[in-house]
Image (cartoon, rainbow, N blue to C red; front, side):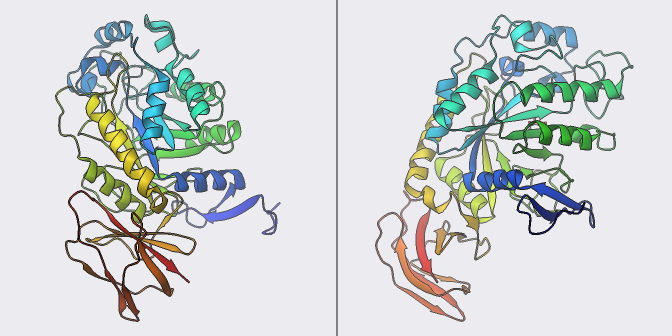
Length: 431
Ligand code: FHN
């Protein structure tokens, strides 16, 4: 039965990938997408056995570490100083509305209690605790949504076969049953979406290791949407969106850019997100001191919002469960900025003027926020706005500023730029 347009429960959207195929998206998921877009800023957490190696999350592949050796490393993982309260408070203090944490990365080690394999933090380590359970409870307490990163790529599992582009020298026999591997993943996803309360969604990664394999996504996506109808599916497959997906994510780049080298230029109609390292590493890397400055981080948040995109800012906690002071200080300073200027980011959408070198605009109802990021002068000429500007004030002081609007554009007389202020935010009331 074709759903009637009038029935509120179903909204028809056209997914780019399957042109002509109409995807019916339930209202709960659309509401969850709207929540997600309003949230604008989240914390990405790469944490696992690899944190002990303090060289990022790819060392098993980069150094061809054989499985028995890596399993020994896993058996000694004991993050006794892990405290979910501290982590969630750090995210909240930074103005972040959700957390996306690695439940399983490419090394195949599960950072949660799972029945699908003994190779997990509860059964395989002296820690014997489930950090995802503790985080889920704490996120619930502090009103932060929790998402799970889940790697489809696995350098450890015997049934991840035929192999893909990586994990070829870990010592696995050239045998394996692919459909058992798919069943293994679906069993774990069932646990993640059953045992941890309401989950914001699943952030997939690693499909690019076997881009032409049959990942049977339709089954996996249907499973997720059945278990938690408002859980979002966010796939980092570097392709245009596929049916069943809810967010298109880009790595280290805003949508449309491709400095990372693997981001698609095909931008669909889904909400978008950019994941970003705070230094140059996802997993804890003791030698990586290329930390972004707080003004740079503010610019990333604001330029993402101006591009109608969320920012997922990463931390790589240390193997004992603590967070590096360089990350903590940036999170709290970013939080100070968000508590003062957050209204010009949260609950906004990009535009009406598209991103420019001098800055971006964001909008919500009859407010337009002009974010002047790179402009030394006091006079700023902008493209014309469709709506009439009634008033222009500085967000930080509330001070009125002169403006002139014509069909040719809008000019603003700004206060002097200060090196202390990464973003001069002008609030326009429009009608
Ligand atoms: O290989 C992963 C990498 O370790 C990290 O998880 C990033 C995060 O977006 N994604 C993959 C690289 O594309």
